[in-house]
Image 1: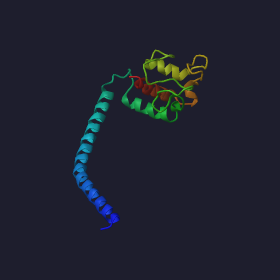
Image 2: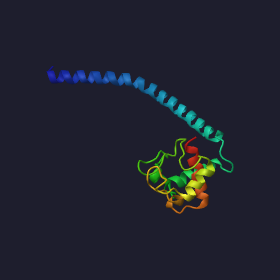
Image 3: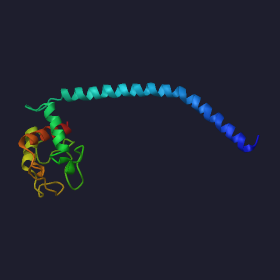
Image 4: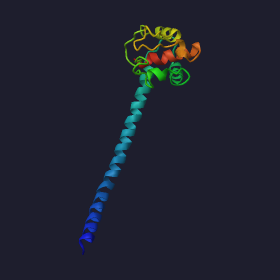
Length: 155
């Protein structure tokens, strides 16, 4: 047998051995995947339960929060300056996902007032103004929805 054929045979043998070893591991990894999936489902259920257990401000429901998340990421244009997850954008918008509040006391009503009135560039920690209602022309109801969502970010 030539050296080339010997190397090919050896490679095939190792490949076959690896395949056989992995095929048993594959079933194990599918089980692990199923376990991970089940853990994710439990984790998702716990997160949902945690959201339901969160004591929301008076007059605010999880539906209001979810609507606010949609407005935040859509018509309200909030994500442009504050980021998709509300963690702020350097030089643009403050972090909304922590417990530090500069322009309100962090209460739902305080956040509503900040969104309604905006923040002028002189008072802004980034030097960038936040126009009233984010400058997007959202309705008063949408302001309350966004405020409900933002309120939950730091909780």
